[in-house]
Amino acid sequence: MRAGWYERTGPAADVIRTGEMETPKPGAGEALVRLHASGVNPSDYKRRANANVAPEFPRVVPHSDGAGVVAGLGAGVAGLREGDRVWVYNAQWRRAMGTAAEYVCLPARFVKPLPAGASFIEGACFGIPAMTGYHAVHVARPVAGRTVYVPGATGRVGAYAVQFAKWRGARVIASTGGGPDRIEAVRALGADVVLDRRAPDLEARILAETGGRGVDHIVEVNLPANMAFDERILGEGGSIVSFGAASAPSVPVTQTGRRARNMGLHFIFVYLLDDATFSATCAGINERAAAGGLIHRVGGVFALADLAKAHDAAEKATGTGHFVVEI
Ligand SMILES: NC(=O)c1ccc[n+]([C@@H]2O[C@H](COP(=O)([O-])OP(=O)(O)OC[C@H]3O[C@@H](n4cnc5c(N)ncnc54)[C@H](OP(=O)(O)O)[C@@H]3O)[C@@H](O)[C@H]2O)c1
Image 1 (cartoon, helix red, strand yellow):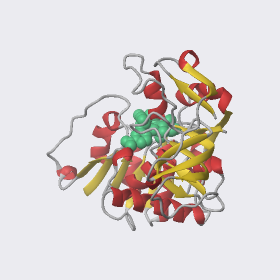
Image 2 (cartoon, protein in one colour; image 1 turned 120 degrees about the vertical axis):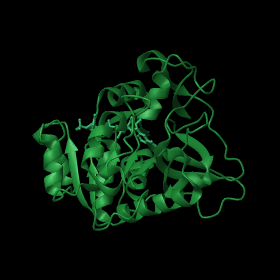
Image 3 (tube, helix red, strand yellow; image 1 turned 180 degrees about the vertical axis):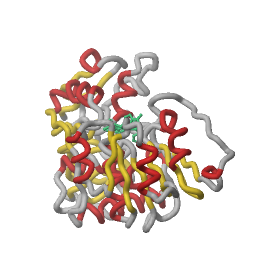
Image 4 (cartoon, helix red, strand yellow; image 1 turned 135 degrees about the horizontal axis):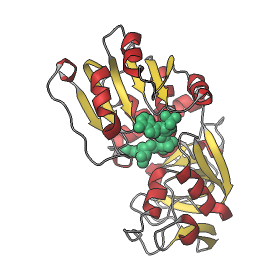
């Protein structure tokens, strides 16, 4: 099969190779999927780029997310048939073989039906980005009738968080550091209020939008950068869910003060959800996608032969959407 891989870590152009390798065979409990699209996520390029840490395996075929067609089943797999259109997640999580290849074998529980109206390219965005966005909205109390604040709403995860929060009946205040185009893009996702996150009056605007109460739930893309701000705009009994910490490994939290009372602080890591949460998350994404209710912000589509270019583009861009490899 055709595949892309790296055998040492470093810059994409230096370490990523594409070529032929042996097609895997499904073991017990596994499905073989003929992939048509493979999603590039920060975890994929961060692991590959970190030249201080050796690859987890002698050869890594990167990427956790993808979509394609079931091409074979190992013993004991129920609920899937050859020819089914599917999306997959966690393919390269703690495993050598991910989705940057024509075929992948993976535990059947990581293989989900792809709704009829969804393309393979869209299905390749359902894994890390949509699952994180969905879980971030659902991890605390139900958001119906509450106000959710989503900074980083142009992001792969943030854009889904906006859409799932709206679907679940929240009022969504979102922000972006970009210009009018980005503000318009976030409005198109359904956010009720879209603000400039760099504006000096951001705090006052958010408090004014909530009648001074503060928001009920914050889906935070960069907790170290924003915690002090979030504490000022969070309503009593509200919650913050952190899925990103790009700017620092730790963050001070103020325990005193009115807004911290009964505050919920959640940290999520999408690869390690429990089985019930995985199931509910995948089912929710499929329900919304089947109804045609999801906008997928695809920023670029690359051929498998250009895998290194796809990594480079994903690494350099932020807030421009998903980078997908077509196979
Ligand atoms: N915990 C998990 O399971 C999990 C899952 C997926 C991703 N992640 C992590 O989450 C982070 C984001 O991933 P992604 O794929 O969504 O990235 P992305 O598509 O690049 O989105 C990041 C967004 O954050 C915004 N942003 C940048 N700096 C910000 C700041 N200081 N405050 C508020 N917003 C800011 C940018 O938008 P504007 O410039 O338009 O504001 C951008 O749209 C990465 O670090 C990734 O590794 C974690």
